[in-house]
Image 1: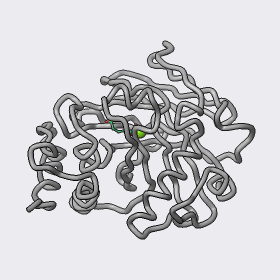
Image 2: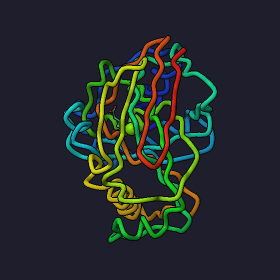
Image 3: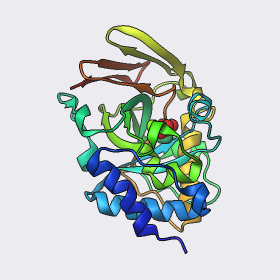
Image 4: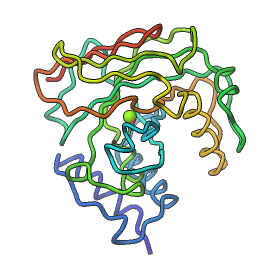
Amino acid sequence: MIDRAELAGRLFTAVQTRTATTPFAEDIGLSVDDAYEVQDAFLEQLGGDLAAAKLGLTSIAKQRQMSVDEPLYGWLTTAMRIDPAEALASAELIQPRVEPEIAFLTNDELGGEACQAAEVMAATEGVMPAIDVLDSRFTGYQFTLADVTADNASGARYCIGEPRPVRGDLRLTGCVLEKNGELIATAAGAAVMDDPANAVAWFVRKLDQRGRTLPAGSVVLAGGLTEASPVAPGDRLLASFDRIGEIALAIA
Ligand code: OOG
Ligand code: MG
């Protein structure tokens, strides 16, 4: 019998003590479906209101980096949001990494097992530049898909810019990631499942499997376009996106 609350408790203790734990999914035969139940229990223990969804491992760059070849989703709470004027308090985290993402703001309900990118675009109010701050609760970011699903897709913090209407083809949206004024990664929107709208459509289909829909007014981070980059106090990150804008994050 899988004790979801106990597994969620292990992850919650890792957060509270800022000490990574060992992956458990393989040892106990945790399925990805069960892992989403653990994720729900973990989020309940973390508390706070859900503010956005985050999709993970939606780009080849991320799948290769993490040696996991399927996407997943998790949730970001209001307490995880960093105001652009604030710095990330890295001492609160275990092993933070950052990655640039394109976020969607929806204005219509999305649902169904056949949702496709065109429906997502028709229900998109605007897109925002975002930085997803990861903090795997597993030592050295070593995990299986079920582990990282239970661990809420390594979600820890995020910052996000203002929505802008979509202009042009999101596949061609250039992304430049700089750390301390130096270029560290580049990508285009197509890095995320050929089109980040495909990632949102994938998410809507996944929600449908659990009998859920994505309500109007949802914010969805479509997944890292580049490999995630470790950060340390004093670092300054800047993610710039063609036609979407830029977002900066200082690490304290
Ligand atoms: C898993 C989190 C994945 C993304 O955008 O790929 C994620 C990880 O890399 O620790 O948020
Ligand atoms: Mg991410």
